[in-house]
Length: 127
Image (cartoon, rainbow, N blue to C red; front, side, top):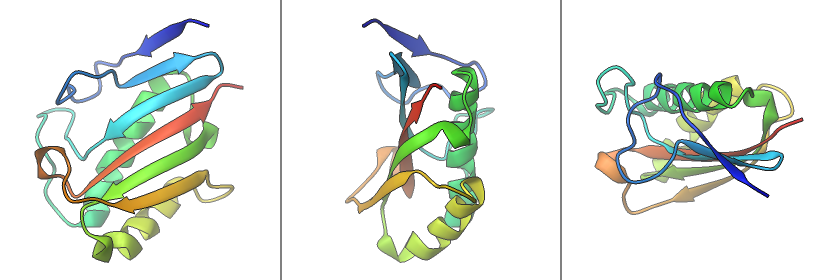
């Protein structure tokens, strides 16, 4: 089974050596997205809801580049720097997956790239 790297010029440049997403067969593995503004490459400021929207908008851009949408996401892993942000994160997240949300794990971590407050990775299914 071959792999195909998914790219988009509408995404922030990666902060390390990784692809935004990789398709293998019917699965698309989306790398962790942090709240980077695609225009500036800088972290967006604001509360966790603002940062969650930026992360999920970036995730949506990757999905679109792969010909997919939020409805194709089967599994999400969310990393939070502070679990006190969980309720606000979840309330914002829910607006992107209002029905039949994907399976999800939310994990507290000691730190994230560039001091981000959250990172989200996903696995989507090509139908």
